Image (cartoon, rainbow, N blue to C red; front, side):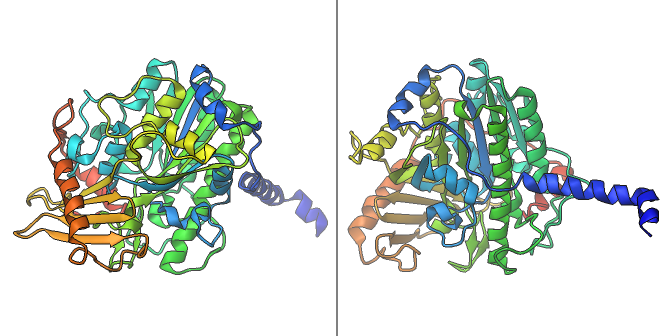
Length: 467
C-alpha cells in the first residue's frame, strides 16, 4: 500500500497542493509590523526626505464603527487596529457622498460635490483636473492603481497621473467565498488585487512609489476564510468580509517589511462610504446620508512607530486626506481644495492641546438620489455636521425636508430635533445654502460620458440597478 502511494504521481500533487496552501495561509498570519520608534516631532521633518513612498489603501463600503480600533467589540481588523495603535487615527471622518464615484471624486480632488459637480452616473472628471497621482509622478514616484470597482474606471477620469491603472482579470479559481448577496456576480476576490500589488512591490518596491489599491470584498460581503468567523447573518457576513480584507492588508504590510521599506512608507487606510443595516429602514448605500453611510475610517501609519498612537479628535473630511498627505510629503498642494492639511490638528492632538486657529470647519456630504436616473430631474440631499449637530436637508419638492440630530445625546440619529431646536436648524440650514451657492471649480463642469452595455453589466454585478 505504501509502495503504491509512493509510486503514484497523485501523492506528490496532493503534497504540493498542501504545501502551497500552507505557504499562502502563512501570509495571513497576524504579526505586528516592525518599524523604528519615533515621535510626533518627526512629522514636520518628513517633507525634507526624498525617499518616502505612499501605499494608499481604499476599502470600499467600510464604515468606521465596524473596526475594533473605532470601538467595535468584535476584533474584525487586527492589522488595521495595530496600524492605528502605533500611528494616527482620525476619530470622526465624513465621506463626501454615499455613492462611490461622487465620493472618490471628492477624495482625489479635495473638493466637495457641490463644486466638482460629479453627482450623476454619466459624470466624469475632465483631464484639466490636477490629481494627486500627477503631483507624485512629476516628483519621480512610480504610480500604479489597481481597482475592482467600475465607478473609478479610467473613462471617469480617475486614471490621471498613473503610469499603470488596471482592473485585474478575476481569478479563475478563487478562494472559497461566501456572500448572501447572491444576485451580485462580481467575479473573483480581493486576492486579485493583492497578488498584482505584491508583484508591483517586488518589482518597484525599492524605488519611490505611489501604489493605490481599491478593495471590494467588503462591498460584496465576500470573504475567503474557510469558516464564518463571526456568524452567517447578513450583518455577520459584512464583518467576516472586513476580517478577510484586513488579512489582505496584512499581506501588503508584511511585504513592505520583507523588502525593508516599511521605514520609508506612508500607509493610508480610507474608505469612500459606509453601509446601512436597517438603522433607518434601508440596506446598502447610495440612498441616504445618515451617519452609518457617511462616517468612514482614516488611519495613517508612518515610517516609524508612535507609542502611544495619536487620535485626532473632532470631525474631519475625506477632502482633507490628500491635502494632508501632500503637506507631509512636502509636495505642491492641489488646486483650490475645500479640504486642508490636518498636520496642525495632528500635532495639537499629540500635545493634548487645542489646535491654533478657528477650529475645524463644518463637514459636508451630498447625494443626488436620482444619480442613476438621467431622464429624471435631480433629487439632492445634503448633510452638514458641525460640532455634535448634524442637519440633513432634502430640497426636492415644494417644501424642503429637514432632519436635525444631536450626536451628543443621540448617536444613532433616532430623534429628529428640527422643530424643537429651530435656532440650530436655521443656522445649519444657512450653512447648507452657503455650501450650495459656491462657485464651480476652475476646471469647470464635469464631462458627460456614455456608459456601454458591457460597463452597465459590470456595474450591475456590484449591485447597482439601472432603469
